[in-house]
Length: 246
Image (cartoon, rainbow, N blue to C red):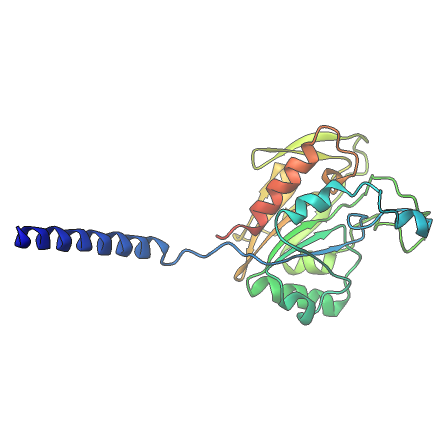
C-alpha cells in the first residue's frame, strides 16, 4: 500500500511539473500588455472645462468629459505639456488628440519613444468640427487643423483632405468598428510594408521599431456631445487596439 501511495504521489508531482512546464512554454515570448499611466497630449478640453470664465471652469459640479472616464479605465492619466525624453520616458502608452504642432526636438523625442516600444493613439483632424467657447486666435482654443507633417512623414504617412466633402456627422467602418466622423481626412502610405490602411485611409496601423502607432484622420469621435455612445465605444476600442501587446 505504501509503495502504491508513493507511486500516486510521484505521478501527481510529475503532472504538476508537466503543467507548469506547459504554461512556461506558452508564456515564453509572450509580451505583456503595456501598463502604467496613460500620457495625454491634447489641445481638446478633455481634462478641463472650456469656459472663458475661470470661476466657471473650476466649478466642482461641472460634468466631466466622458473621454476622461474612458481614459481613466485604461490607466492613470498623465497630462503632458511637452514631449521630451524625460516626460515620455516614464510612459509606455500615449494618446495625442488633436495636439498642437510639435517642435523639431519633440518630433525626435516622439519618434525615439515609439521606436523604443511606445504605444501611440494619434487623432489628427485636418478640419476640427467641434465648436469652441474661445474665439479664433485665442491660444486656449483647440487646434483647428492638425499640423503634424514632419512626424507623419518620418513614418511614411501623408494626411490629405477633401475640402469638397459634405459637412455632417456619420459613421465609417474601421477594422469592423463603426467610428463617427465629420469632415475626416485621408491617410496615405508611401508603400511601406509595416503600415496598413483601414476604412479607405481613415485610419492606419503601423509597426515602428519596437512600437506601435494607430492614427485616425479625424477627432469627431471624442466630441463631448455623444448621445448614442458610439464615440465612446469607438474611442475605448481604439485605445485597446493601440495599447495591445503584439
